[in-house]
Length: 342
Picture 1: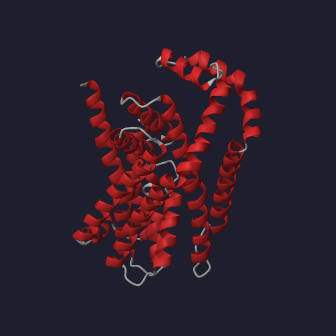
Picture 2: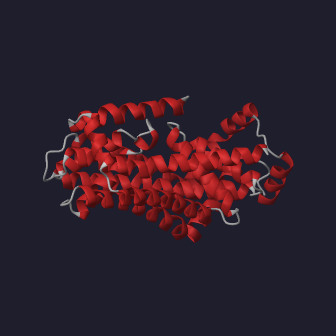
Picture 3: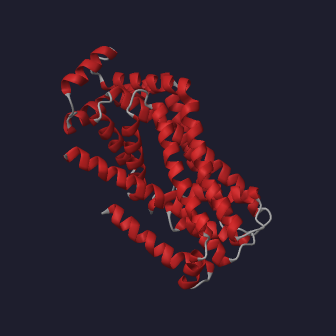
């Protein structure tokens, strides 16, 4: 239901908000989109798929020993879920764990790999990109009158500070130990209420090997230490594909702008892309769709692009950054469900 409402809101924003912001009729925007050269659309499709596969490659680096096919299906389906359902990141993580567990991957590998990949993704998407977007918005606003600069700076800065604080606490082992000691009674109560589920014998064996005796705080701490080891050894294998995935998405904007709105420099386009990626974190519509396209189109018009061309460019970028992952991840997720039933 959340996904259906999110998609409905996305359609409303694209049909109503985007043309209204650009002061165009919807028909004018459709005509501009129809005028996009076919090679540009094909390039956007290929680069969108490539970005999904590159993120899968990063996830595979954090999950040594997991089957490649299972990681591809799990990561793509999880990404589509996180896009389609507002706040669906945790549901996506659960899907990843379920798919990998059914394919024979150990729970220890799943928990460690997902946590390591999520930490890198959080650093990139929750810290680095918003900071770069702030700098880009400030640079663009220094030459143009862009609204909401101060408010956007404050909100993004607060989010970045909170993210860094959480990561710093997790990175400092003594602080993590104190927090877990304080939360142990609550953790035990929650586990008693919801039940632990799964293969109890297998979990008991893993706990025995870990030397934790089944203590929740000790289990979490032991998992935290494994994640730290994974990040020390495999950080490049996780981070580089994720950066390459963002570069593939940025190339979509550059190709579309080069075809439809010549005269905009590469640095300005990079700033527009970073601002769009930061806005895509708003968990209201898939990938921030509608809001992101409107903001990107308005920024392009402030850089000199014609309104219709700016709208078409924003829609092409949106197709590569949220439409392609939704369709591809949904298809792989449905295939996984059919395979499970079979």
